[in-house]
Image (cartoon, rainbow, N blue to C red; front, side, top):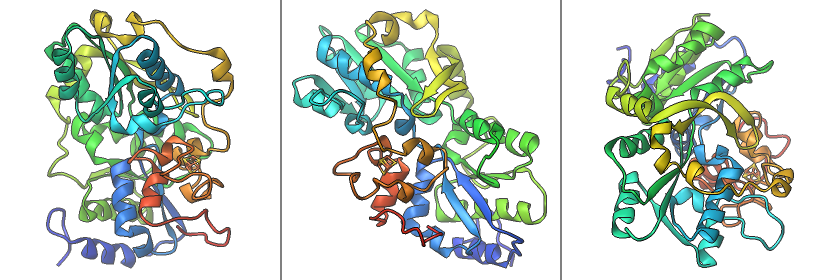
Length: 376
Ligand code: SF4
């Protein structure tokens, strides 16, 4: 019996994948930290034919959060005496500062700043309500799936003492930038299920339609991921390309209309800086002018420090930007497992749970790549 979406096991999809007659080596990119985690933890790479490569791409919002935004959050917490709330991942992400200066939110907290890790915008609202005599800044970094609940919070009305330092990013423009470059570095795309749930799978139609590259939306189960990979490889073998939805039980045409409405109502799309990568057109969100009273960038001083910016976006030696763009694998960074580990991270990709370096470390890869080892 042929496997179909919803009934087939990952083993059945893998069997079909192995039965494909791949004429050459193919590289397939995923752009979701959740996908990369599932791939690394299940050991999927080792179960694939030699000539199939799975490369992690821009799937970690914390990793691309601009250095200046993190620095701004640190300085607001230290100098303006606000309560700074942020998703837990952000607390250990380092910025470039002179030796002996505070370089993470965690260090700022140890130095006395009032910084609280949170898991959802609801907690930010609760903290603001419980501290009506204090000013609370919500440092909100994330892709569409994280930014949509922030938009809902803004749309529904926020406490007066709460403002947002927004570092929301859109995923597809980063993939578009790669595809417009001379060497995109991949032959097929497994598109992110989470983002597609909110924004609709149609956002990824440009990949096959404009760039003639096969794409399939994948979920987070092994079945859905391998089905998406199989779909992309089969399209490559058959010299076809279309957008396949291999997560139909969750991803619906048009996405989540209410979340999209709230995003549109509260935020505008802007060109945005991606850490170590630079400005990507139409890749970020900014609060609309009518919410200026809750926009941290408009109501607090800027702590943008030119001297600090000259030091560069990434810590010296950190190859996170190339990891994020899928140009190298995490263990191809010379610092991986040596100077850089989760206990002592050098760059953001080793801090965040969605960072490829941290995921690879957690999956048991503990040393930089041996030059002789070609296949991760
Ligand atoms: S191993 Fe560390 S230094 Fe190297 S790219 Fe990853 S986070 Fe950056």
